[in-house]
Amino acid sequence: MKIVAVDPFYLKMPDITTDADGTQDTLAVRVRTDEGIEGWGECDASPLVSLATYCCPMSHGNIINIRQSLIGEVLGGSDDILRLHKKVLRNALDIQQIDHAYSGTDIALWDIVGQKLKRPVYQLLEDQFRFLSDGIGYPKIPYASVLFGDTPETTFQIATRLKIQGFKAAKFGWGPMGKFDEQYDIELVESAREGMGKSAQIMIDAGVVWGSDYKTVYDRAKAFSQFSPTWLEEPLAPEAIEAYGTLSALNPPVPIAAGEGSATFRMAEDLILHGRIDYVQIDVGRVSGITTAARIRQLAEQQEVQYVNHTFKSHLSLAASLHVFATNEDFNLLEYPADGSELSQRLTTEKLEVGSDGQVRLTDQPGIGVKVDLNTVREFLAPVKIEINGTPIFDQSVL
Image (cartoon, rainbow, N blue to C red):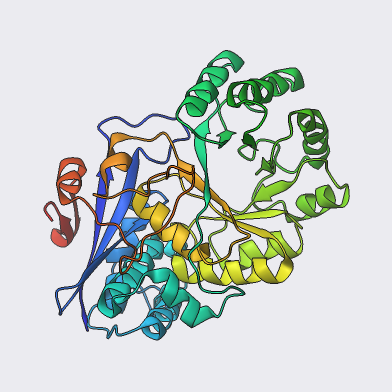
């Protein structure tokens, strides 16, 4: 096959707020081949900044846009995906957004090859990366991923709703966490625990609120430990590696999770090897796609760190994320977007539904296993036209 088109689409809700809700807009990417097979992917980053990396004119040999690097290239198997991954990132060496932006395309390429070979992506990954597993796609426990309510009372209501919906685990994040005093933070966590019940797992996402202040994080971990959270997530800034390492050396009573801010393998590697985190959370829409996420999974297995997806987008991103670690039975938790915009809920025609046993499974459908709903793309498409000196370099107003 040859790649004949690489098309980014800016999709957005009519109104965007300052809430830490990444489902309000997105950049979806479609890759088409000369055999009529097409794949889709999704980026979790500023859509318009990422879109520019698909069409920006070449400045020199280290600034070559994604479409220029890919159109006309041969795509026959997973070896080609890895080859093209290296080519695109090398050609765009000086484009700072490249890892975020290429994520959607890398996902689409795995989808295409899976469809071509009539195999699910997780099987292709097993062949390519030789993970420490038996190749079986295991079910995962979905934890509902939601924001804290503005008050402990609203947090309790959210948790109660999730419990009624059947979730056995839930993560509460951002919102007012860390913005008032310690007692308020404790009340937020207590409300989440009370709403979910004693037997459920709860996770706390601090949203990088304490910067490099590992002492406050340790104190909060001690305070939160009475509610038995599975982890305390991103209490420090992504670049605060030394602080994470110092925190780990203090042996906090609650496990520490981080990694969603990693845009490269090296960033995740630093958190694992030097930050000594307990859970590494990787977003395939930020880290240049499935290819790099699979390498990080390998490292997590070697270092006996738990790998978890970070997903706060659509079920296209969710499915792509699950393929990365489906074959490791021990990596049994799946971040599951329980709330989200209409755009994110309708972007795919299929969803990864929670089964009667409370778990989520991949099917054996070839590729990623979910299809993009073109009617949703048309409805939420925000047309973009870019001109330089009156000459169009990008015009995406229709599918």
